[in-house]
Length: 294
Image (cartoon, rainbow, N blue to C red; front, side):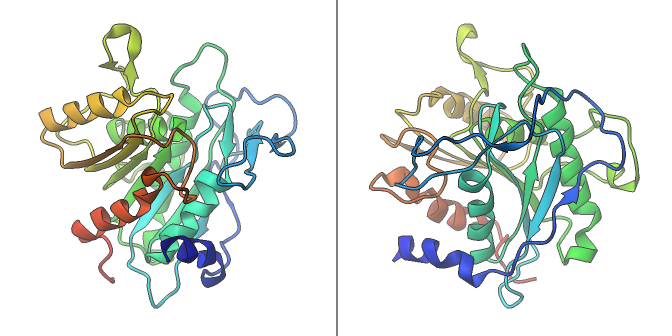
């Protein structure tokens, strides 16, 4: 039944709004894109749950796109969604639009961020995507009244490299990584909650899995939900050590580690138990009062 509900979600949702440019005029930071923005997937390449996915490359024009839930289900909660792709491409449907449609099904507005890729050579924590994520969260909060959102119920959700970006945003919000451009940059870009699904790059394997410098967890880090499989090639240690830091800082969190499931499944259901994470995340959101009707 759960899988059937997921496959029928799109038909229940309103059409997403037209994408919005993240930056008015010139864009701060680096742009490493070379060539045309396009889907880089090859026929039958790396199917997930038997279906293809969009691997969007050469993104030099960051945008956000708002997916609204049905009015009779709208909770006023919103989630900024950061697809993964190693900071080289963006899995725009698997970890983007499909996620927004699921959020809509539980009464949450999805805000899909198309951030800059690929990363500049040699940058493990590229600054451009952080600028894009900070700007997207700020814009969402600045438009809360217009979009019918509760400005104190705006979170972030990320997968893989997008999970790194979501966690980075959750720990780097006091100062913008760029000079303020308008009023949207004067409101807080701190997520009210964070969901990390198979997040990558949170720790440094060569330094005993110490948290990377951009993951400076404090008591102000957002309450966090985490899910990953033990056999994930990005390494379960990312989640384990990050959770230890959350515990030390007394940040509320919920962690789910499954024995198998690998990486890069989005929310497409398979026989693997890890693909039930949307149910667990829904329970967590509900337990925090985030699914109560506005």
